[in-house]
View 1: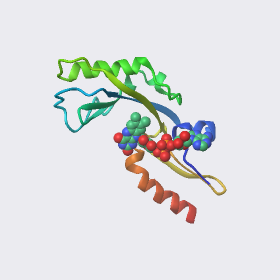
View 2: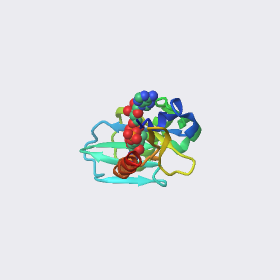
View 3: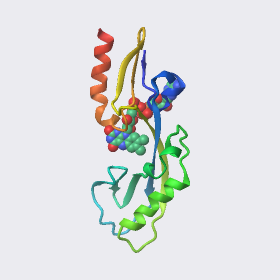
Length: 152
Ligand SMILES: Cc1cc2nc3c(=O)[nH]c(=O)nc-3n(C[C@H](O)[C@H](O)[C@H](O)COP(=O)(O)OP(=O)(O)OC[C@H]3O[C@@H](n4cnc5c(N)ncnc54)[C@H](O)[C@@H]3O)c2cc1C
């Protein structure tokens, strides 16, 4: 069995000490004449955004309240959503009001040493978790590690 529960791992394998870290996202309504095109990050990557056509997809601000974001609750919070909207008002050069079309959140899984965890936890059970917010990039390598462990 391969356990891939990521930020939710404490519920099934608490001994691995995986820390949940919520990442919240907002998507604006279309902004006429939007000039921002491309992908961007700011503040050591704690804010990350891109345009989708004439809308902005912006995530982050977890560093505004690490403690509250150490959660598996997917609801999200007005505090972080407001920080994200404030960020847009501050940095986006637009005369029109910025309105939010959608917001959602996801849960990352962090290890104390910030390295992904891929190991045999008991007979025939491998944990492949905690990509520390980099799972999209690291998944192919993680999959190779899992395969190697299972073939041992
Ligand atoms: C806002 C945000 C932005 C990100 N940006 C990037 C980025 O730019 N680049 C990058 O590389 N990575 C990024 N990541 C990280 C990346 O999304 C994750 O590392 C990746 O999704 C991890 O994949 P996973 O399959 O290991 O875990 P997840 O996608 O978290 O999947 C875990 C699954 O386990 C399920 N589960 C949990 N508990 C149980 C249980 N008890 N029983 C059964 N199922 C269970 C959950 O429902 C979920 O489907 C970002 C994450 C977030 C939240």
